[in-house]
Length: 267
Ligand SMILES: [Zn+2]
Image (cartoon, rainbow, N blue to C red; front, side, top):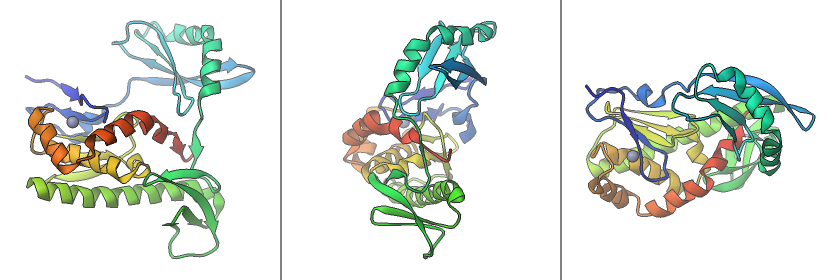
């Protein structure tokens, strides 16, 4: 009996892997988040959304402001505490306002925005005509058509680019280690850059396409290496390092900038 034990990568890559003894499916690694209820709280004369969460493992009421996106959340340890959670957040109004003033806020993938792509800033620009609905050319991401649809189109483009890049990168590393994944999935998870299930399915966050190539390469190498070693043993790390010599720099980059990649969205 192994239950649903997963363990978190000791490095800052945010990788979780399933228990190797479990015949896991990839969705085990992306368990539904605990209940989230949006509530409104008035701060500095503005009505702001607060996400109320239940987390039985929390030892007390916790208010958080995501420094990248400005999302406000309050976590209650018990169901009974949920009703008091908003009052608790209200009591922390000044602290929340201070955090919000420091948060750079979300960036919509709209015409005029500057977003990182392969680690370099690119401006999203409208194009009257061109070779595709969306394409990248030096430091510009061109998007055709009605500007109101641009964010969705750019997002689809980024996910497609991410998938192509993951697939070729996985093939490369897998060939070097003599392993074969069962499938590759592209997801949008806030806390995990990649994962590997015991069913040999690899999964990656599309947001890695925003990061420099050596960072994406490291996360892919990390997950591919799990196809050889379903653990974080020294043998595992030796494989990762042989595939991605810039491992340490990539981990440091994710620690410093990973959260920033969560800012880019369609709304
Ligand atoms: Zn790992």
